[in-house]
Amino acid sequence: MTCDRKHPPTDSLSYQQKRVELPRGTLDLSYRLSGEHSYQLDDLLGFAQRINPKRAFLFVSKVLGRHIPVSPQIMRQAFSHLAHTVPDNLPEPIVVVGMAETAVGLSAGVHQALQERYPNALLLNSTRHAQQQASLLTTFSEDHSHASTHLIYQSDEPHIQAQLMASKTLIMVDDEASTGNTCVNVVSALREAGLTELEQVHLVTLVDWSLGQADNDDHIALRLEGIAFERHHLMAGDWQWTDAPDPQPITMPSVDTTDTGSQPLLATGNWGRQPTLDSTEGFAHFLARFKQAYQRARGIDVVSDPFIKDSGTTDNAQSTRILVLGSNEFVWLPFLLAEWIEQQALMTSQSRAQVSFSALTRSPIALGGAIDAVLSFQDNYGLGMTNFVYNVIPEQWDIIVLCVETPTESVDALWHNLDNVIVVSP
Image: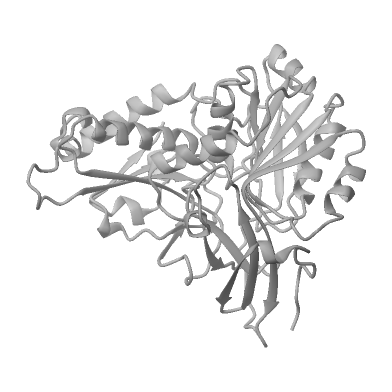
């Protein structure tokens, strides 16, 4: 029997406790919630078992729109709340860095909210998809991940690249953090690539599990010499994992690649794979493509479709369930589309449409806990890799809008064979 994280918070009596039993072991949590917002643990997280020998469990976010379908309104609220944990009066220029693949939508949402206070802040996401028309800035490793190698690209616009290289504040956005090692890896890689003016680093996460590691941030400060380091989050705590006796061995699918697949990445604008001030520049085109695909599939314009606008005027009318799916890292424009559809549905008091957002992923997770259903299929990038979608039973949705950044024909036949699926491609 083995245990991780041997040092619970010293003032643990002020923390709430939770024990989670999973097939490969037991997860004991000590946590406290941010006083600024009304989130409870069950609002933010579920728990599941990873198919990964590096870490046997997974914190499954209920506000991220990645493994659990969630309303765009709830996602937008989380983006705003998380952005408001970031202090005022930070030294500029500022760059917001998001982590592929899980947090690229979260980082874009936080960046957009932060621009209310810092309108010139840049967004720059890591990626695992090689960009043929862009110049690589640096790489780094996320040690505990199922796919550890990340790529970071530079801008081909001289004034944007100059602003990036002059950055004084780096805001790293991720869904959760523990040791902060990944943040250090990112900052170290960027400093070596020329970002030598950094004065502050802010690690911004939905949940931070560093409590109980009293010397951890001191260690980070030593590794980030000359840079002030702070953490911001909606919930903080500590975890301790205990292996089950004789757990069954697992085999993780091969998903750690940054190779170029056989399918082309089509033009979707720049939503952060290169430094950008405006993460929404490709949305107008993608929205137009959605409207075209919707009209072809349903024979009617989405704006006037009574299926969206008015699903019935009686108390017994059934709600129309609409699911928008992003794909892997391509989630920000699909989220904006889901938000647009939700707003269309809300424009009439008679609407009974319920819109949710989730995404396809390369992350392998076992059934159980927060994972009630899993579909597996071939990836649409032509990498020969298995992809997954979780907690989605297709027949339970009236309309599924599957958004990809590759050609329509790249999508697995599983999706094309479903009558309620509309595939949207640039």
